[in-house]
Structure formats: C-alpha cells, structure tokens
Length: 515
Ligand code: BG6
Image (cartoon, rainbow, N blue to C red; front, side):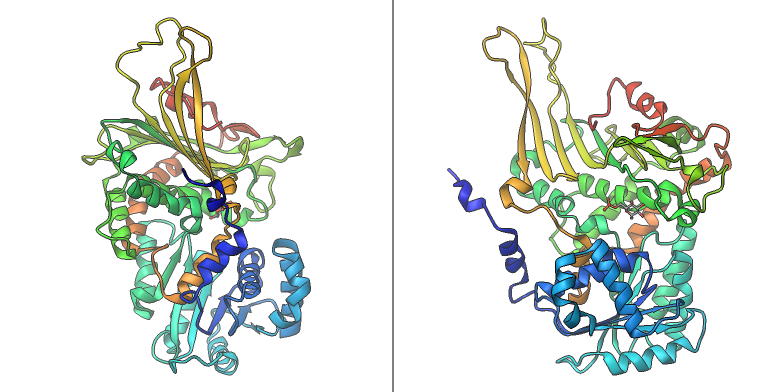
C-alpha cells in the first residue's frame, strides 16, 4: 500500500526537483515588444521575478520596448507597480532592488527603422556573456497580431534574426485571423527565422493538468484500452469564464470567441484527448499526432454549421452577487456589436478511433463560473440489471478538471447501503492539491524556461496552426455572413449561455455534465 506521506511533497521541494542541474538556465536577454503593455505587466515580468526568486534565472537582462516615453527608472517603477498588483508582492518588496537592475527600456515606434539600430546597441551593452560566445536573445512579441509582421520585417532588415545574436522569437496567439493570414504571418516569420527559432505560445499547453492528459492516457493500461468509439459515448469540453472581456474591448471586437479560445486552447485540449499514441515523447512526435487529429475533424458545410454550432453574446447580469454590464456596454465595444462571446458546437473526428463519437465543445465569457473541464462519458451497459425499479444508473464519466481545481475524477455506481436495489453514483477523486500539496503552476514561467532551454514541446507548430484554422474558418465565415445583431445579447451574464447550447446536446438525449 502506498503511504500517503510518500506522496506528500512540499511545493517548494517540487520546484527544487524541477530546477535541479538540468534546469540551470543560460544567461539570456529578452526584448519585449510591448514591454509596458498588459501581458508584460500581468504575466511576463511577474513570471521572470518568480524565476529570479527561485534562483532559476540569475544572469539576464530584460529590455522593454514600446511607444510610451520612459527611461529605465520609470520603467522599473511601472513594473514594480505591476508586480505588486499581479505578482508576488512579498518578493517585489524583498528583492526588487536586485531584480530591477536587470530591467531596461527603449522608447521607440515599431515601424520606425531608427528603433532597431538603437535596440541593437542597447542589447550589445546589456546582454550578459554566455559560455558559448553568441548572445542569447529572445524577442517576445507582446503586441497585437497585426503588429508582429512589422517588427519581424524590421528585425530581418537589420540583420537581427540570425547570425549576430543567438535568437529566438516568441509569438502569442491568435496566429493570424484565419488560415490565409496565418500562412502569410508564417511566411514573414520563416523569412526571418528558422522554424526551430519560432516559439508559438498557447499557454494552456503549459498547465500541469493539461500536460497530464498525455501522461494519464499513455501510462495507464486500463484507460488506453477503452479510449475509443467502442466504449466512449461522447466527450465534452467546457472552458467557462466568469470574467468579461475586461479592458480588452478593441482586441475582442476584432477577435471574438472562436479566434480567442476555440482555434487554440480548446482545439489543443481536444488534440491531446483524441490523439494516437506518439512514436516517442519528443516535441515533433507529439505535435505530429495532434496535427493528425485537427486534420481529421469534420469540416462543416453551412447547413451543418447552423445545426451544430451555437453562438452567443452576453447581456448584463449578476455574478457573485455583483451586477455586471453586457458586452455591448463594455469600453471600446460598439453599442450594437455583433461580436460573439459564446461558442458551443458538436464536432466529429472522422478516423478509426472516433468515428461517430460526438465531441461537444462549449466556451464563453461571463458564464456562471470559471471552470475548465473535460468529461469522457462512457457507454451505458446494455442491460439495466439493477435499474429496473430505480432509474438512476448514470454512465461512467471520467472528468479532468483543469481549473480552478485540478482533479481527475472517475464516476461509477455502487449499491446504496441497506437498500435492495438503490444505486448511488460515487466519485473516485485524484486531487493534485491533496496529493502533491501544490496547485499553482504559473504557465508563463514554464514556457519562458522551455524557450530559453530550446524545448519546443509545449509550443505550437505551424502545420497545426493551419489545420486548426481549417476547422474554424468556415464557422467564422458563416457566423460573420449572418451577424446576429438582432438576437444579441442572447444570454444573461452569470448563466450557462444561450438556451440553444442546452438544446444542442439535449436533442441527442444527453446533457452537459459540467455545471
Ligand atoms: C487567453 C484569452 O488566451 O486566455 C483570454 O485571450 C482568456 O480571453 C484567457 O481570458 C484564459 O486563460 P486562463 O488561463 O485564465 O484560463
């Protein structure tokens, strides 16, 4: 029997284990385009500070680059405020003096040629020396998608991508706004960088429970045997958020729910659930198998899109007892916007493993609560031996809760004590928190470390990006061809989305398991 104590691992210890010898991070310089923007303030600088606190990064420089006029000192103050708000406040107090020396700033317009020679001079001056002569430089594109090509072109023209420094670039999703623009963006990127220098970020891939899908599936004999159409009735993926679009009205008006969540986070999760066993665990093998899944998702025609997808936009409502505005009342949003904040669909994967098994997907802003969950519902037994008089035999369900809790739960039926034929649905729960005494895995830290180390496993490959666009492009085109101005808003903030999302699954005799 396993001693619970053996499994009780202190989170600090976990971190140390991870750091070990192999996690010693080489000196690097990170140039953040959009250095004072939202992503830098909320995620990037707090993550680097965290890595600094654990000792993983010691020898590094950050160069924020952007339009707001600032000197180094002002930039450091701005980032201090950001860390106090979004990061480890205590760390910021303790170690800020030491940490902030690594931060620098360059005021410059991205489209201005003069910015880049300046940038090069500063990097030359601040970059820490490495053992292998070349300076490691990461260009982080923390800018709106439309600006990325401009920066990359300038970097290329100024010979800053290859040769002079040892460089990599990190690009944030969405990669383009459809397949065509993704191909064009890639043309520009690969004109400047080699594929192995390009890191396309999908932060969902670095969430521990998302990574665990692969481990769970391919290290447990019992589940892998029944992971197919013979045993699985349907799969449900819910990515629900209770927040609205916050202060990102302009971005969201351009993007909408499909480009923001479905084309990337949701399809990546679906890929991990549905993929075949990879030949090995290296980045390319895993990415090969996921890409095959995207290629096998049935592409819908207009009629099927109307039948199998549900769009929505939130109106005002109440969440956690607080009144919240509707989408159209958010800042930088048109008062008659037809942009969508909710998506539900029934997908099919046309391959030997999944033919005929429906994959129900659902995501939206301002839903009842924040929860990301994958439910694998198994088929029912052919005979209701115990269920003749009590009709409560539910199917077995295996649930991966990704957030806010991190659990894997198997639901099965047992006899209700002292009854003759009453069945009780019990849950067998594996909780990360209880077993590993840790639950907080800041995604950007892991991704930054992987990028510095040159590990591409958790980053998205271009062929996957294009295949994912192929799945959603027809849906976006159909939705945009018939904008739903008059029916929006069609769900109340704090609800589970439009009624039609329930209809979508209920007409198949099923219901959403995540509630
Ligand atoms: C981002 C989206 O990629 O993911 C946001 O742009 C969304 O709209 C966020 O809120 C959700 O991430 P998480 O990790 O909080 O689930």
